[in-house]
Length: 431
Image (cartoon, rainbow, N blue to C red; front, side, top):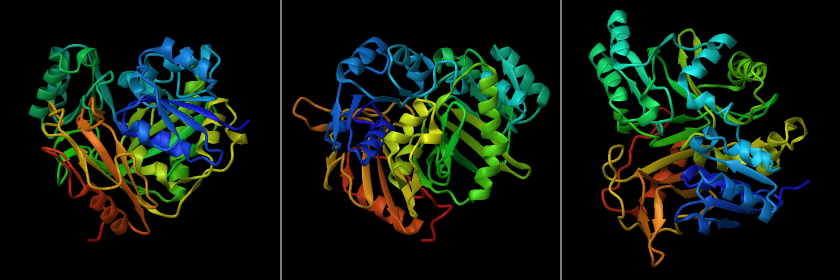
């Protein structure tokens, strides 16, 4: 059965990219996005609904009224809250794990224990339930550790310390209440060394299809300096892995995790995002996420050729072996994020956005602009409404060409205090 009617849940650049990519499927399905953002309605083939991602009852009712064939849940918070379970209970095919599977991201401790039991390579860790306990562990180790809030903290609950003092400060920050309930338990990890890479696998509960590896840039400042963000840019395919390397990751990391989930009675249907560090002893898992990365998703979607909507439906129905082939364009894809002034602290909001290009939901043959923290005012004029405002994405035959196009597109957009890094992709650019 062809996918004709799709609901994408979420309001970020990731969700706009997913909606854009599925609307381009050969059957040209109608796509609804809820709640979307100020630029979502301009995506060809997309209609915006105003139900919050947290309003499961309204979304389920909406799916039934519209005859939705497939619901795709973008963000981690509604997945962790059980939105996929509630939609499935209403008879809707869903791409996205239930609350049980979403623990891969929603609890660092749960995920580390699962990895340990599955024999997946990852850093040694300790769990603390108070600042005093955490500091005692750090003092006993006598070295820098990675400090992670156990729960969901919008990508910001991590301190990669370079000294014992920074470790202690990170522990104090978590238990200070900055990250709410997410910081009431803290995972402390040994520091790993090496380049980072993200691998995304579409999963139907048993089988996997891997997408090209990507690298993102978490730090706000050029030269990978300053505090962590949700991500200031990305590129794909990251040359750190060839096909053989990806297959090793599938065999040694992803398949054991899926098997461990199945042993716990968890039928995981969605994307598994493995954040890896390539250490001298091989790839080790830094973290798992239960959704597409942002901005890696925006970077990857333009590379996917074939019927993405049908492939995601096959995952949702547990029949990935019957899905049409999903091929990858032989191109390089580059993504650069523009952020609001003050981000990743308190962002400056409400600034008018001026685009001298073809529009904030525009897509050309080799470039795209995906809006994220954007709202429309009463007159329909677009304003900043979040920390990361938009992402310029472009493709080329090499990374120099792709990044030149992405930065050229971003130069057409202006808003007060706009922040961007000029060195995204420095690992692969020659210019």
